[in-house]
Length: 273
Image 1 (tube, one colour):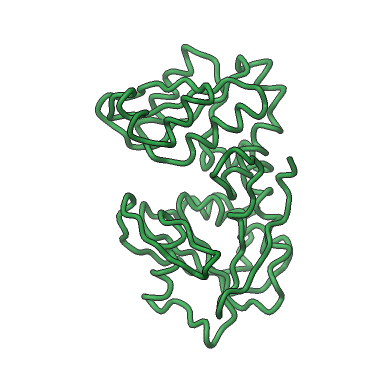
Image 2 (tube, helix red, strand yellow):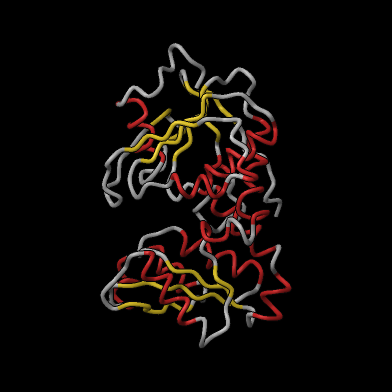
């Protein structure tokens, strides 16, 4: 699998879209995009380490409905590794029954383990996963926390995607969740000496400016960026149909798109977005 494969850029109406959703390397797996790309690169570049020191096992921990869980499960299957999925604040059997993401993990052979009976926050799950790592061998996949230790896999594989953004683009808007993808894109802009008005649009969650500042290589601030937020609930699904054949993700991208337009952060009639 070529995880450096360039995703296309398409214009729909007045706005250009970088179609990372079309990076779908597994025919039997519905989830696509940058996190799949990063996970493939991370495991591929650490294959020997995982086999030799981590009992051929990879592990992650995330909220019950997070796509991170099945991504790690599917990538583990691809490389022939075992996988462990940590969850919290639930009864595992009921969670597997309720959430398709966890049901998929179970079906492909992942071990689903309860890390905390009462808490499901990422910070708690990561702490409990660290404790478990003292008893069992596994290679942790936590994406944002591996920006420095596995930079090539987490950041550079995304930085590469800046190359085919059209020259006529004036304003580049990036949806932010953990902001890891934004760090990769900002690095790509700096390395390739591109000139944009750069906008980070975070539809919900914690302030990620510290993650961004720590993640940008060499702290070279040739580029200022704007950071905008909205207050959408994480679990509320918001639809956004761009065309008859293209709809945005209902958890992240759709909310960022609506916030971008509703807050008048960009004007596609006057700038190339």
